[in-house]
Length: 338
Image (cartoon, rainbow, N blue to C red; front, side):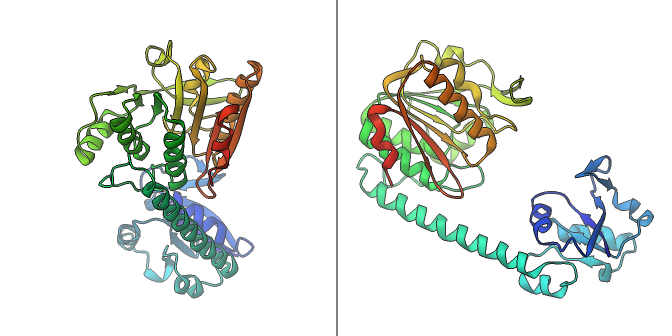
C-alpha cells in the first residue's frame, strides 16, 4: 500500500478523492497550514511541522497554492521526489499511475467537457432569447454560470416570464445577474420592485460595476442570521427580519437566489408568507435546485400550497445548474418554455 499525506482538503481534494486508486493507497493524514487539529472524514489533520512524525511515501499538493506548499515542504527538508503535483492534467496522472485510477480521471475530464458544452448551449439559448426582448438593453453585460451567479437557464426563464407575464410587483432575494434583467424590465415597464440583499459591500460593488440603480427599485440590506430548523435538524442561513418588506404585499414574481445556501434546507425566508404574499397569478423561481437544501425548500413550498388547496405547476430547468419554477395553474405554459 502507498502511504499518502494530502496537503489541502478543499475543492481540489474533492476532485482527487474520485480519481485516487484507493485499493492501492492508504491516506495517513491531511496536512493543513491553518487547521491542524481534529479530523476530516475520520482522518487526522496535522500541521506541516508534524509531517516528520508520520510514515509516508508521498505528499499530494491538493490546492491551487501548490508553489507555496512546495516551498514550505522543501523548507522542512522534504525532497521534490516525495511531493506529487496537484495538477489535473493527463501527464501528471500518467506519471503516477500507481496512485491514480486513469479511467476515473478520463471520466472526470469527459464530465468537464460535457459541462462546458452544456454551458455553451445554455449561453446560446439565452443570447437567442434576449434578442427578442426589446426592453432588455443591449449594453447590459450579463454573465451566467459564474461562481455565485445564476446560470444562463435561470436568466432565460426569467426573461421569458417577464416578457409573457408582464408582472407589476416583483420581489427578489439576492442581488446579482438576475437583478440586471429585472432592472432593465422595470425601466421600461414601471413595475414595483423590491430587492433583499445580505451584503452592503456587494451592493456598493454592484453599483460601481453597473452604474446607479433605478430610484424606483427598493433595496433592503438584511444581514444574515442563523436559525435552527428542528424538522431538518439544521442551522439555516436567513435574512434578519423581513416582515416589514414582505408582509401586506402581494407579488406576481418572486426570485430566490439568496441568502447563502444551508445544509438540510435553504432560503426559508419566504415560507411564513406563502400563500398570502402571492397574487392570483404568480411565479416563484428558486436557484440552485441541484442542491438538497433548495430541494427541501421547494418541498415545503409545495406543502404550503397544497395545504391551502392552491393549484400550481412545477418545472425543473437546467442540467448542471438547475432552477425550479413553481407557478399558478394559469401560468402552466411557463413550465414549457424550452
